[in-house]
Length: 148
Image 1: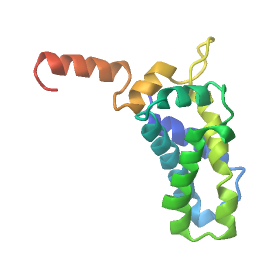
Image 2 (image 1 turned 90 degrees about the vertical axis):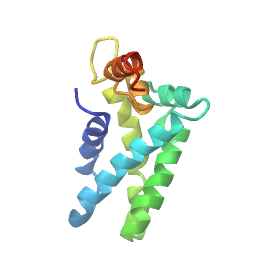
Image 3 (image 1 turned 45 degrees about the horizontal axis):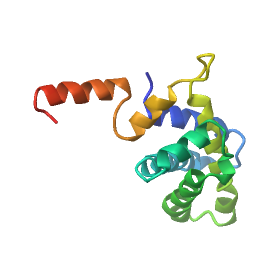
């Protein structure tokens, strides 16, 4: 199974073809966007009500543009990536990629037909620092052998 970072990067990279990103900065911008999305998710999952915010986002219950998870990703992207690249007006346009990237997160979640890459509950476990069922198993085995 692909890592969560790889799944997010794949979703973000699909946006790259439609964005007007300077060629020499494309990898930095898309990599930074992926990191911002993942950072937002991992920060949100630890907050009270954060799991529900993530579930609402990835299931489409809340539009990506209206989600506090997206707002956090936008702040991370702006402060950690765009400001460091000094893109000026182009950077303002690139901020529009954040809600698009967040909206694509639903594409990695398995639906009732089995389409998608990971189960929603496994996503939450991954964000909390586990690796889904593997992370739970490692935790159980570690506690049995006193390695937790």
